[in-house]
Every structure is written in structure tokens, then in C-alpha cells.
Image (cartoon, rainbow, N blue to C red):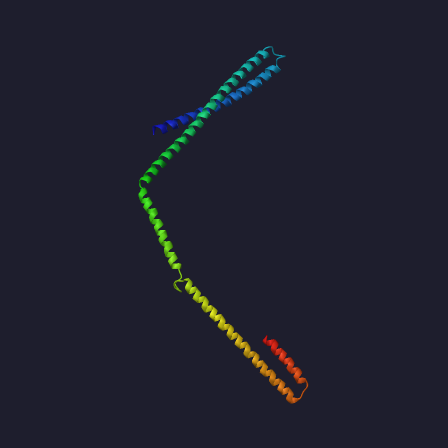
Length: 218
């Protein structure tokens, strides 16, 4: 509490000194301008006033004095500004240090509430639960519809497919033979009818019909 009051007092003193220096600098600037104007007036009257030269020298001396004072005040102002800047930096640094101290104490308190052995046990338990969940997922995704699959069952299924293909091929060949026999019977009947009628165009028509039937079969 005492340090805070002291820092506030120091800051107020620095602010007051800075304001006073700025006011004094403004006054010196005005005096320097007046002295310069006075020098110009006396130099202009040197031909008609015998004391003008002396008055001009006095005005130059005053101007020189004002300039020296201004130079000193500018130096003092720089020192005060530097001190103000350093004071502000010290405040920032102090705030940072306090924040670090509070954070460190809080971290220590939180760490005391955490047991490393307990944390390790929690990690092991989480890993075990993960393994169990993966095993459950694998069990749910397994296919139980056809039982356990092995090479013997696969070979039996392949043989069954082969027998089915052979049976289907024999049925297809038998159906094709029946179709050809029916066509030949129809062709023979047409030729017999042609001979009975004695028409010379019938054999040619019958031959054309036979060719179409054979083409359709193939």
C-alpha cells in the first residue's frame, strides 16, 4: 500500500514538473522572439541614434541568455520524460511480475490436486475401454449368416456351381435338337404336298423355306 502511494506521488510530481517546464519554455520562446525583434529595430536606428548600437548589443545578450536557459530546460525536459517513461515501464514490469506470481501459485495449487498415479490409472483404464469397444464393434460387424467359412466349403460350393452349369448346358442342347427335328418334319411335309399337287414351283419354295428354317436354327 505504501509503495503504491509513493509511486502515485512520484508520478504526480513528474507531471507537475513537466507542465512547469513546458510553460517556461513557451515564455522563453516569446522572450527570444522579442529580443530578436528588438535587435532588428536598434540596428535599423543605428544611423540616427548613437545609443542604438549599445541597445542592440544588450538585446543580443538577453537573447543569448534566453537561448541558454531554453537549452537547459530542454535538457531537463528530456530527463523528466525519460524518467516518466522508465516509471511507466516499471509499472508494467511490476504488473507482469504480479501476474506471474499469481499464475505460479495457482498452478502449484492445481498440481497438488492432481495425483500422477491416479492420472496413469485413468489413462490405462481409458485404453482398456477403447480396446473393449473395438472388440465389440468387430463382433457386431462379423457375418454369422453362413457360419464359419473355410476352404472345404468353398470347394463344395464351386462344385455345385459346375454341376448346375453342366445341367443347364445339356438342357439347352436338347431344346435346340427338338427345334431342328420339328423343322425337318415340317419341311418333309411341305415337299410331300408339293409332289402331290404336281406344281413345279413348290420344290423351289420348299427349298427356300428349308434354308430359312436352318438359318433361324443356327
